[in-house]
Image (cartoon, rainbow, N blue to C red; front, side):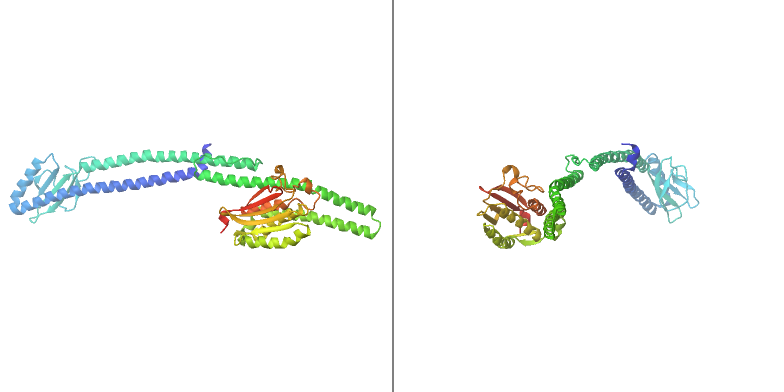
Length: 455
């Protein structure tokens, strides 16, 4: 990847922000650790100084001025190379005893460099505190602060090296993670570009990690599957319309042309017009069915789902089609269990069942028996529309739901070949499984309503 693209990439900017936040956090943590550690050690030094100072004050009270001078001189000589340093001076500022130079009497804590009156970063330091005695003399005790100085330097060096190593590592890790992320994103971009250019078969690859990118890829691929299905369906519809509507349109034009040329009186012309209107209505009915299928496949009707009493719906349809079946010399029987609800669009479910019953009536010979059943089976609801007619050959059962598909035996009967396509669209909208089987003899259509939708 070109460096300029990496610098503009959002993951790299996030990595920089992360490295900056990491550096600030490390700085705050180091400062807190530095302050806490030095405070603890300094407190211990102060406690040692105060204990020694109080001991000398007690000596002064019990032994007098001369004894205090001897004690300070003795301790200064004994510990001249040791931990403590001392100063005892008179009110005029002259040193009476000790190994520290005279200084202004000040009872506050101070940092002392032996041989100087000012703080010197390059020399050894002593932490001391003095007290003005009742007779005006000034007594000061100091403790060697070299360990405190060394600890401060060690902490500063350690913290500096930590930042020097950790921040570049954080940046390197951020760049590495950015490259991994960008690689996954670029893979998605390449696939979407190829799809945009017309290759609908391309899919986003999975890394197999089941992470957010894999879930995103799965969702994108599912969306692409749906888009490919709709696009192929649209192409198929266009092809089917061009193929199956060409004949009725040509027939309509031929009839109008014949009427225009051969009609001898108004009666002939009126009959030709009536026939043309009938054929036009059939064509408009076909286009209406195609539009309805497209609306159903778009899923817009899903928002209007309500609880539907399937038992009552099928009973009402059987009652409506009973006279129709009798007129066609068929017997229409039913076995419907009570109280089987389902959540869906009542109008579409009615049309789905009605189309199946109409197909059974239309495509079976007189004297056939048609059965409509509804029952609960294995935790789900099963609807069955069966007949003992000629049925559908096994090789054609997978094709009957295609738009405009018609068996040779049914091509002379009325219809557009869209009834079962509408059934398939409604079933897909509701998640209903449609199964076509052999009724031995005849046809059996089974509708498996999903258990999750059945209350």
